[in-house]
Amino acid sequence: MADNSLDYLVIGAGPAGLQLGYFLHRAGRKYLILEAGPGPSQFFHTFPRHRTLISINKKHTGWDDPELNLRMDWNSLLSDDPGLLFTHYSDRYFPHADDMVRYLGDFAKACGLRIAYDSRVARVERPGPFRVTTADGRTYEAKRVIMATGVSRPNIPPIPGIETADLYGTASTDPADYLNQRVLIIGKGNSAFETADNLVETAAVIHVAGPHSIRMAWRTHFVGHLRAVNNNLLDSYQLKSQNAVLDGDVKRIERRPDGTYLVTVSFARVDEVTKDIPYDRVIACTGFRFDASIFADECRPDLVINDRFPALTPAYESVSVPDLYFAGTITQSRDFKRGTSGFIHGFRYGVRALHRILEQRYHDVAWPARHLAATPMAMAAAVIERVNRASALWQQFGLLADMIVIDDVDARYLEELPHDLQGPPIGDRGHFAITLEYGPGHDQVDPFDIEVGRISQRDSARAHEGHYLHPVVRHHLPGGEVVAHHITENLENEWDSPEVHVEPLRAFFARRTASIPA
Image (cartoon, rainbow, N blue to C red):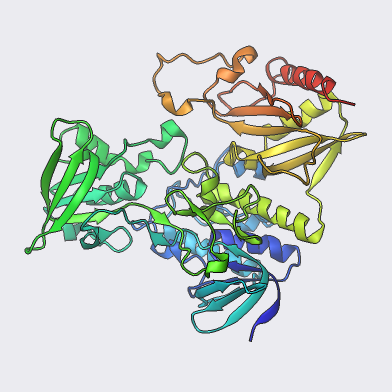
């Protein structure tokens, strides 16, 4: 029997599903969350395999402002209850994954979220409203479906013989199982180096292989690139301790009758074009992908990035299936390998933006806004206050933007919209967009090289040359060129100097408001 009463059916009770459930519940909407497992967030019951999160848990910031503290808290979901912060669950800077499992379970209970557990979705169809069928035959109907399933399938590269290798999700994590063995790990991300680090004390040789150069998070500012907490193998490689990083393509994996492997590697930057290398074990740590197999043809969403993620509009809606929305790590096509949509500290704000979009589109609830005088000083003061405090702009840099819309009488200050959202609540008369961003080419600069020139923190005229995170204000006028103003970077991320930060911004607003047609 179908339940025809749902406005929203959320699939997945991981962090994104719980976060969206919180907002839907608070707004009094008719919703249900379907979860395949017996409790929330089955992903964190298994991953990361070696049970240490790389999302920081910085409890002691020196601040007493809860909004500022969220800049340093990468694990908490958003709520009005200060007791529902992850910082109460662990003192560790890099917490244990079991603490995340406990936290998410408590969050779901404390918020009274409507979740149907042991409800694995088998089919999503759209004969009219969405019709969702679970593996045990229950059927639900909803006007809108929000996928919050995460990336639930391993991303398997098309390498002949890859099916004989172990996978990151199922390989043994007991170092004793690799005693004195030669191990090849395919992949150069955190899962690969996490796995390698676990085997350093027992494996004879560890090779980590992939076609692209290793990218360090401290250089690219993408937290999904290799984190320092996982890069011990690099020391052992460069200090000639038998381990190595292989830059090249794995062309073939042959499992021999005795259970060992012969792997053909095509090197990218050495004289050996290809080489056959023997190993005792091969482990594929090549990431994950979204599973679209549950969708019927009439509502199967378009995919991007080698079919790993759904293709999205700025409103987190499928580009090909109206009323099919996405939340959480599967929204990372919006800022793939540049931003934070793949991680809790990023997508919690994306989910809040999605909820506000849903409220506006389907329930005539205006986007939260405050009114201010449409004067250069009032607008500059509002921007300075936000960039010095807002956690959403800080965590979703370059993706979420505050916006100032000048109306006939005054100005509206809107917080935390997708920067490229069109139409309501922005309108078509032009607006100012405020973001925090890294400078162009920031990932090409070694931040520890003191020989590399950096602009002075007081040089507001050269603020656009800054590489580090800093505020950017852009003026968008219909049919006109976008004009940008950069606020110079600052070591302490404090943009409140009257001379260096405020006055240049006020002057920018004065020039730009004078150019707005009456």
